Image 1 (cartoon, rainbow, N blue to C red):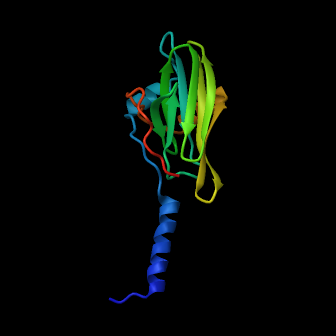
Image 2: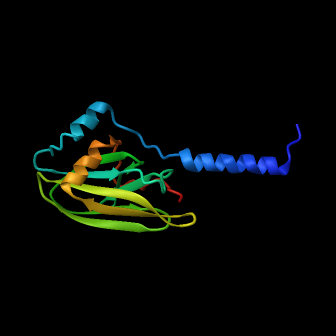
Image 3: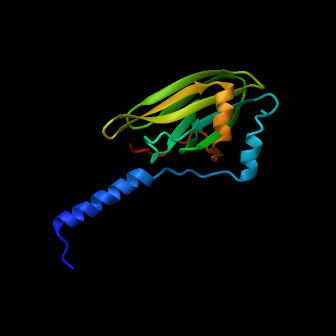
Length: 166
């Protein structure tokens, strides 16, 4: 079988387009029971709940978004997933980062409260994806969590986030 160079290039180009269009990031997921429990929005006594939600926006959907709390890796979210953390009251620093940037949010958590954050990857130019974090209102946060599935959080405090190429 003798394929022309143009045929091979068309096939490679088509494969790349399919990968861009249909490829997506994946993260380990909890079972449906843990997801349903988290969606009751009931923090543990004496703690605050932090929800980190990633909705699909088309840009960067083939990449995971890694989240750190107070310098410790706590998990990753893929499009249409969220993670839930129960934290002690007090000051916390949330960081999302990747090869091209890092963003932080500061939180003074109050026991019994719920906090919602949207995490995303924004297009910043050819082959450049910036990580972004933004606080959400209670209503928007609950709606976003209800529309997504719960991902597993890491239980390895202090672990560095896996490499995340843009």
